[in-house]
Amino acid sequence: MATRLSIRQLQMITVLEQTGSVSKAAVKLNVSQSALSHRIREAERLLSTTLFLRQNRTLLPTNAGKRIQHAARRILWELERAEQDIAQLSEGVTHTVRIGLEVYCGVQWLPKFEAELTALHPGIGLEVMSGVSLDPLIALRRSNIDLAVVSGINLSTDLKQVKLGTDQLLAVLPHGHVLAQQEWLEATDFATYPYIAYHTNPEQGREYDQVFSRFNMLPPKVLRAGVTEAVLAFIASGRGLTMMPGWTINTHSIRHQFAVRPITAEGLSIDWYAVMQHGLDADSIIGRVVDILASRTRFNDFVEYK
Image 1 (cartoon, helix red, strand yellow):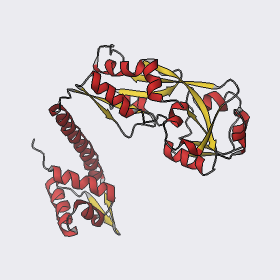
Image 2 (cartoon, helix red, strand yellow):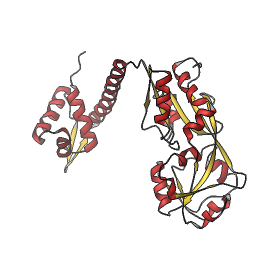
Image 3 (tube, helix red, strand yellow):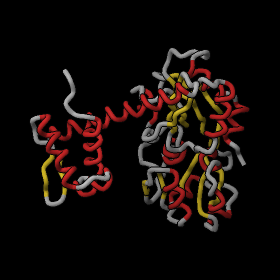
Image 4 (cartoon, one colour):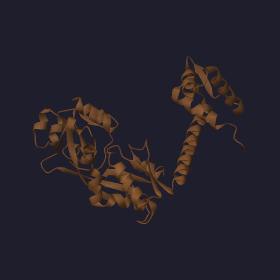
């Protein structure tokens, strides 16, 4: 059965979903409002159903509209990926490895890593996938990515993990903070000040597991900031404290705004892993990519501890 909607109409539907109004969508699509209204009516005529309802100045999708929005997102995403793959094939890239980085992972090591990957395996391309940072392991299980870089301990056994190296879990606080005078922070120090977190899901090997649960204490207030840049912005403004792996804080160019201290006199460690599906051997495409990261020497080169 031939499809009824064109790519242009699918693009219109996704823009309408993003903007929620005909006027804003028309500006984004660089057409007049009347022309866009005509396109909407034409799409509804082709599908023999109403896709959108007007409420004041807002455009609300019907159930049919929501279904076609979902389909439009998937179709356009797959088309974009196909075009990117074809472009890479024309440049000599025969395989693209999609990598997902957890929210705690720094990114400044990526250019050096990609350069070494290209030098050793010019036929392998790298694509860093957005939108998976809060839980790249779910994206890996769904085959939305091929490789995840995550930190923690006791990772799930349904996935193959290769240890990259051992890091430190460090306290991060503003310069000039009273606790910055200490050589290290005790767990009880976090019971006095607000805590800035990515999210509040307890994770093995991270702050809840190693500090809050272990020492039976909780901070007086937790502010969820979502991404590293937002966490650090709150810290720099004096709104609270946080904990991060050394790799995370050391790969941010704005580190000079913060004081970084070990947690407890002995320090707390945290491991980094490359995670992939089971059944991939060292000679596979993904195995070769992991091999570049798996050497401890190379890992330390990428981490660039200071």
